[in-house]
Amino acid sequence: MASLADATPPIALGALDGRYRGAVAPLVDHLSEAALNRQRVHVEIEWLIHQTSTGVVPGVRALTDDEITALRAVVDDFGTDEVAELGEIERVTVHDVKAVEYFLKKRLTAIAPADEDKGLAELIHFGCTSEDINNLSYALMVKGAVEQVWLPTAEALVAQVSEMARALKDVPLLAHTHGQPATPTTMGKELAVLAHRLGRQLRRIEGQEYLGKFNGATGTFGAHALALPDVDWPAVSKAFVEGLGLTWNPLTTQIESHDWQAELYADVARFNRILHNLCTDVWTYISMGYFAQVRGQGTVGSSTMPHKVNPIRFENAEANLEVSNALLDVLGGTLVQSRLQRDLTDSSMQRNIGTAFGHSLLALDNVARGLAGLDPVPERMAADLEANWEVLGEPIQSAMRALGAQGVTGMEEPYERLKELTRGRRIDGDDLREFVRGLGLPADVEARFVALTPQTYTALASRLVDDYLV
Image (cartoon, rainbow, N blue to C red; front, side, top):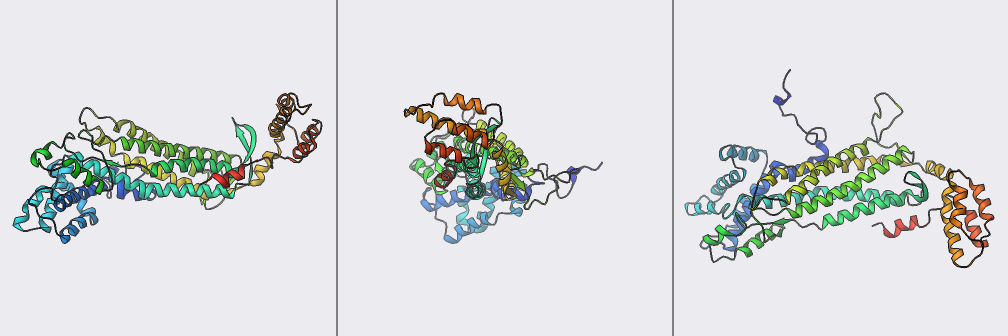
């Protein structure tokens, strides 16, 4: 049997780089191994520019505008050839960040070839430990992935759910609490609850800080302070980190503590869990016939049962959200820990960030496609409401309680009287109206309840959508 491992081009081991590549491809620019190396190149170049433009090292000339442009073009033009070249260098250095240093020294020599400029190359990676470069690179990678890919996709989905909520705000729905028929609501209000929950998590994620450190092998600026004792190194570090668009962390060991990552992953995981709740609710509404899957499906629902259109988008999303959360949870739990001043657990762990976001992004794509293929079936919702007149027992006994508290006679034991009428039995509109007319209610209250139906008992549901759904 031929080995698939030897196939050319290589066959993907995981589903994200195989079957689902199209949905997650935008993350490759941010969270792949190649993206990590590109960000390392970016950070090293910006550190060189920062040193020379601010005079950190006395006697070193500033780079010209053309040289700075040429250096930054190394990042802009970073592609498959550069990935391969770095790989060749790393096979010699057996160290990924050192390979970046040598890669850039070669580029700098070509950009500033004069003999008197040879010393400039020593400012590449000057004062740095590998983690100074890596932590900033990961912060920029995750920031870019969240702000440019994941968050816009999540925001679009929440907007889609909100639009559905507004469109269906007046469509009555029999609620089910504990799986039992309960006080009616509207389909729009129930979707609005989910949109509101999801939106709240997105606002937390939008406010996320992305921290970075730049302070040497154990966070003391040890080599920096001895090499150049007259420099205010914390001020230099702060300016450089903030110049990259990150928040400066002044107190660390060799590594940035990753607390911000744990905070972010917890919020994304919570968003995922709420989205999972949306999937299971919509799946259930489909199974109850409240939604029909009719638009844009183009799927074979079953290999043997031609009548079926399975809610596969929501089931696929559930699975991917669970995989994403398993990874986000372990990332958040592991990254906040480090033995003494450094261990490498975080290095291997962080290489799974892309996979965690990839499964979440794939789920977002599936939910959006699934929702786009739904049509509400109001008549099916109305049929369930018509079959459950007993749910009107709640407002009637509540009105009797209020009247009794106001001194109206004949309103005793309202809960017990409605329980006797409704519990464990089906009633219809005639049964309920007859009961209401025998309660001795004030005329205006009696008229209100005689006119009430399960379909009209949605109270403030529509207003809540209008007033409070962002």
